[in-house]
Structure formats: C-alpha cells, structure tokens
Amino acid sequence: PKAEVIQKAEKNNIPVKIFAEADWQNVEAIIAYLRSYRTQYIILAGYLQLLPSVFIQAFPHRILNIHPALLPKYGGKGMYGKYVHEKVFENKETETGITVHELNEKYDEGKIIFQKTVSVEENDSSESIEKKVRKLELKYFPEIVEEFILQKNKLIF
Image 1 (cartoon, one colour):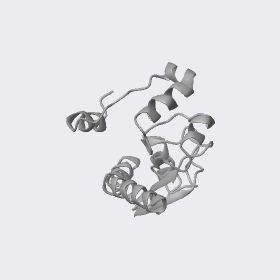
Image 2: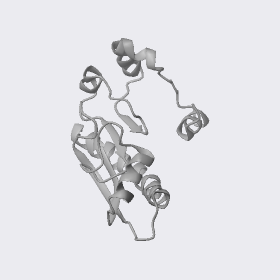
Image 3: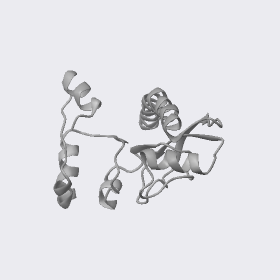
C-alpha cells in the first residue's frame, strides 16, 4: 500500500501492520494484535469494507470514519469517492461536504461527530466538487480526530 499515512508512520517510528482481506477470517487475532499495542482508537479514511460486529464491539465508540458527503445523504454501500460526487452533481445539490462519524455495524450510519459544508456552484463538475471536498477532508479530519481523542481521554480521567 502506498498510503501517505504509512510513510509518515514509518518515518516517525510508529509500527505499521497491514491486514490483508484473508486476515479478517480470524478477527479475534486482529483484535489481539491491536490490543497487544494497547490500541485505543481506530481511524479510518477510504476504508470500504464493513467491519465485523465483534471488531466494532471490541473498540466501542472508538472507531472513526470520514465520508465525503453530508450524511445521511449519499451514504451506504457503494457510495464512496467519485460515486458520491457524481450523485451530488447529477442531483444538482447546492452544497455538499464531509461527515466524520463513529463506526457502527451499518454503512455510514454511526453517530455523527462533525460535518462541514461547501457550496456547489452551477459551473461545478463532479471533479471540481471532489476537489472541494478533498480540501475539507485534509483540513478538518486531523483536527476532528485529535479533538475526539482528547475529549474521550478527558472522560477517562
């Protein structure tokens, strides 16, 4: 995988483990591995699979996902990336944006933590909409993740 986050983690001596699709046949082993590193939070971006219930239950209210639309609109299986932006364009929406939400057992239906909107102009294309949304993702997702973790940790102490 060439995700930039992997390169950043390795550069900062943060362990990286890639789980192949076949690894998910033994969810308990994945959970045990993550617990061996005392993992407290799971942050997803661009992850398209539905995680098993047992995994979600192992990290209750500690798994965040980002979605490139204002949920509940344009959510669900198959609604990701360019497909979301094409629908926003086709439906002549006047705004779109991002949603950061807790993960649950259904696609894009977890508790909404944060939303940010951006205007869709008449001259926008699905590609320009995608660029606008990407800017929001890059700007806000790290901030929201940090705020989420700090708030959760505040509740612990």
